[in-house]
Image (cartoon, rainbow, N blue to C red; front, side, top):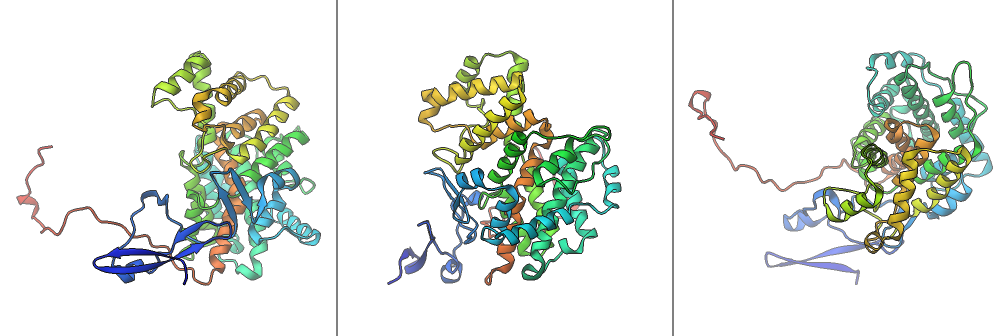
Length: 432
C-alpha cells in the first residue's frame, strides 16, 4: 500500500498521498483536497507549502547543505566558473568542452544592447534606483529582441538564455554609469563574463579598468553562490509569471522587482547601513552587541538565515574570498574594520553561538562589493546578475513541465458578508 496521510473530516476519512523527493524530503500531496473535501489549506507566507517539484537546487537548512543539480556548492565555487555553473543550472548537466565553447560564444555575440535602448536611460532621473532601471530596461529589451519574448524552449532557449544573461550584465553596468554621469562603456570581446562586467562598470574613456585576478575570482564566486536558492520570493515570482505564459523578459523583470524588496535582496545593503551607523555614531562594538542582546529592536544584520538553521554554506566560501580581496587590495576602510570586529565577537560569543547566528553570505558579500568599489545601491543589482541563471532555469523547467498550469492560490475570506448598497445622501459620517 502506498504511503499516505489520513485526514478525518466531517465524518469522512480521506487518504492523501505522500510525495518523497530524491533527498528524502516528504510532503503531503493536497492537489485533490478541495475536490474531495471542499477544504483548502491556509499557510500564510507559504512557509510549509511546496509549490512545485523541482530538480534544480537542493537545500538542507539543518545540515547547511546547498547543491545545484546534485553538485555541492563548495565544489562549484572552487572549481567552476559562473558561466559554466549557469549552463549547469539552466540545462541540467555540466557542459562538454564543445557545449561550453558554444555557450560562451553566444554570451559574447549577444552582449550588446540595441542602440535605441541607450536613449531610454535618458528618461530616468539622476537619482533613479538602479533596480528600477534594470527592471524597466529588461522589460524594454524584450520589445527590441523577439528572442526574449517567447523563445521556443527546446529550439532556441540556449540562445535566448545567453542573450538575457549577457544583456542584463550590460544594462546593469550602463545604469550605473548613467547614474554617476559617465559615458556608457561598450563590452569587450576579449574579456570573460565577470571581468567584462567590471570593465563596463569602471573603465573611463582615457583609462581602461584592469581588474585584479583576485577581484575577478571573488566576484565570480559571489555570482555562483547567488545563482539559485530554490523557491525563494523572486524565483517563485518568476515561476508564477511564467505560468501565465508571459514573455521571458516579463518574467525576469518581475523577478528583479521581487528581489528589489529589502527583505529579500537588500540584506547586504543593510549590513553596510548598519556599519555606517555604527561608525558615524561612534558607538563601541561591545555596547552595540549588548544592545543586540537586550533590545529586540536592534538587529545584527548579516547574521543568521531563515532557511539555514546551522550555518550558511555559502558564507564559509565567500569569507575566504573576502579575506583574499581585502589583502590583495590593501583596503583600510573603517567600516570594514568594524565588520571584522563584529565577526570576531559574534563567532565566539555564547549568545550568538548557542542561537546559531553565524555570519551569512550577505555579511561578506557586502564587504567584498564595497572593497571592489561597487556602491551600495548597486548591491541588489549584483544579486540579480547572480540569480539570473536560476530564474532562467526555473522558467525553462516550468515551461517544459507536462502538468504546468497557471498559478492560482486560494484564500480564506475574512471580510464583510453580503450587505446592501446605500445611497450617498443616506450614509452616515464615520465617528472614528
